[in-house]
Image (cartoon, rainbow, N blue to C red; front, side, top):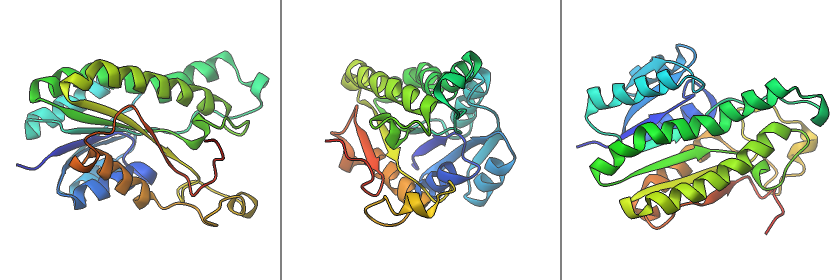
Length: 232
């Protein structure tokens, strides 16, 4: 029986890279994006897709229901999303901060509430959140993302403690500058590997975190950033 992975914001960029990597690894993919891109990619990969937003709890529930109705199980969830608003720290509105929290923190919390009972009944599962290197090296270039992804790291630690006994793992991938994001030469020169990352490298990391080889890894934040972060 093939394993099943749900991936949100899977129409392009890192979400699409994850979909392609999981498909190559033999998973059935269940994809969602706000555009038709996820449906087209899912059809190409022999999976299934739907239009929807991570901001809408009803869409997340529909995505989970689609996976269960089609394949009967959910082994992995990859929570990917778009970028929160950016701007000068004190010029960002209260609505910007609220939207950012909904986009990169509450999406994970909502999905966890929906999918955890299913994974418990199955005897286990894996949740992988696509975060950012700025979670631990806050950047004024990404203020809302930096703050909310740090909160996500804390939530993931708590989730790992609560549901580890049920064999459900949660980890975060912290990408650096990836090819799906425009990068200047100045930024590229700050990266020790002297290049931006590939979306496929994020996808392959996600596949590893879902594998038996990573069965003892939970509550962790895995940097895939070309060495750009300096914290120890």
